[in-house]
Length: 140
Image (cartoon, rainbow, N blue to C red; front, top):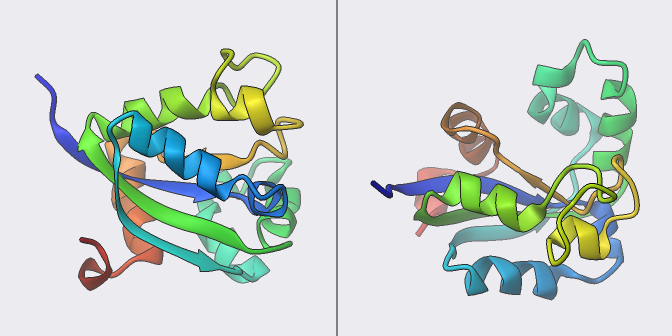
């Protein structure tokens, strides 16, 4: 049975720099996901580190913090039936070389590190990620 979920999505600094914000949003909306909240922010390294704290022990953590604080990002809450898995399908595989044709990463990403978008990977991560950027009063 389908359930209505909320998930966090981020258009990363490379997506903002490439000016593909509209295309990314259009893909989500065309797939039946609703934008429940949206804003553009510029995280500092501390904020990026807090968001990606789950990766703190991974070798790429420092580079990830620098990358995610290198320019503005668009953070959004998507809502819809099975929003978490649908968002991940629309994004495509983390490695754009392995992403299915027509996905955001296959069409726009240049590497695993610069892969245009982030999306919550589970209800548990969404329950941490959404309130990291949005108060309840900002989600409609």
